[in-house]
Length: 249
Length: 249
DNA sequence: TCAATAGTGTCTTTCAGACACTATAAA
DNA sequence: TTTATAGTGTCTGAAAGACACTATTGA
View (cartoon, rainbow over the protein chains, first blue to last red):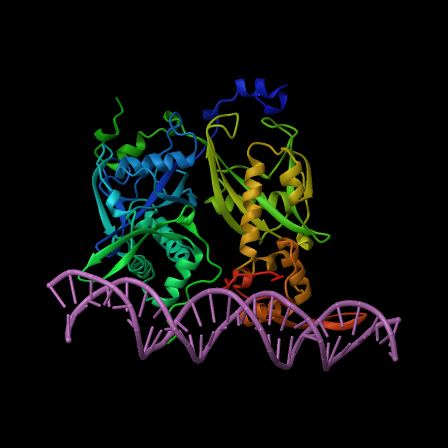
């Protein structure tokens, strides 16, 4: 018997260690990649070219590359880059879903990540595991699509986390391009929340916090020009001490 | 070649699927189990009886049992129960740590859980993979112990999540026994935060929120008796709209 | 000058902090 | 009556909502 207890040193133990002796779950990474498309919050879905769940829409994701990836965040960055060409998104681990039933191949675990990217940065690309790729309005994807595996649940979790963090952080700055106005920013918050925000308090909140800073440029149109702002260093996820309460009625 | 693309149906694909054909990471669950011991926040550590990291202190945890466990939460519940005998703790998934280097056996992933339990409920027990088991003050465990693998980092993450959630949730109710006074609850908050909280606003916050309710009983001593409270249904994790700010100086 | 959007002044409301106060038991 | 702890009254301050107001541009 290969009883572990009999080895005299860690080195000896490791020399005899064979990972394939054990039943272990399949482990993957899946991504909820969000962006704004024409004033709607959309999520990136891919149509699977291979079994299992061949032909179904799914969140982008897949196996960890044990050679290339040094850690889980690198896997997530790699997956995101493969699909969108984006290199420096806002990326956050949302949660890990593991069960006997979620994948027909057997016990499996997937680590879910949320990515926020500006629509300006995107260059979508297919791959041999992807038959199609599309931006789908989030609510529609959650409610009307029958996604592969437990991806409806994962997507709902990502979306809920995003909606709840919008109430007490500056996260939506990550959905905007390099330069934006306060009105752009407020619109982004409102799209995600689905409610209106009071202009004065929103502006005070953002400016007092220091999460954004003036670029010195102005956006001109057929009206009063608007100051342009950028995200401050460390402004990608500023935490406020109070949540946005919304209209009082 | 066993090219996936050649199968005609998912059924056929699955019949030929062999998980051992792929290099996949080792996947485990680790637990940050917290409890109050004599007015200190402590974490449960075990001393490993086997390789790897034999003889080192570590967070309790281990492999998913692909037969017994239906999902990750069940693995976490099982691990907690094996060590403490506790069945219904507050349990929350904190994050997943995966990298090439964190375990000498190779690429590995661990899903970290936070558990909060009342010191009254505990019956510790050893097992054949555990040489010793102990409650250690958290700060000491993080700063002075050299834990196995990346468990110092995991523990720090659990502790930080707990400290930050104490500012805007009712989480500490889960560290108290069935019945407790408002002073007990305030002490628990203060121990975790490491600062004093103003009595009046603390009481108003807790009572107005409805996260606790009177039991009708009183605790008597050589002074004015105190009302006893219990956690309301769904009070285990009530969210407040403002954080505890702490002393203003 | 007008339309359109940017941006402000100021009042109310809510809830946390400060701190002194009162209440009620045992000894 | 004293001591100890439980529990309250009431003020201040910070930040959010409401909403009407002013500002600045192009056309």
